[in-house]
Length: 77
Image (cartoon, rainbow, N blue to C red; front, side, top):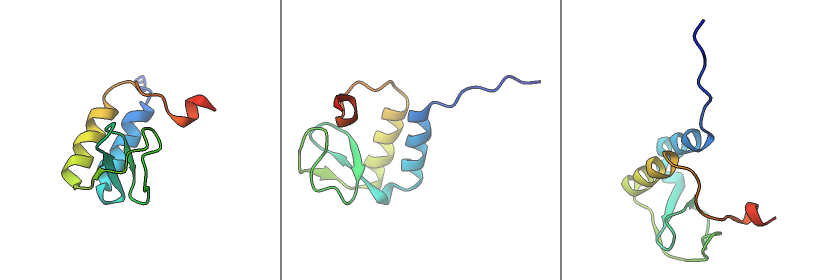
């Protein structure tokens, strides 16, 4: 029986984002990915975003391949 490899939750989230890049945008202040409805980045409070599908997919792949390094609001709560 083959041993199953645990799924990296960041990689799984990145795959969902890459499959639907139109639902997301990349913060130009901190490179976080947020939903298209966000007016401000919840991490750095920037209001400038890159909405191109290419940029969203690229950033999702980058973030999904590495450990989290930023502090989020969830970390502070």
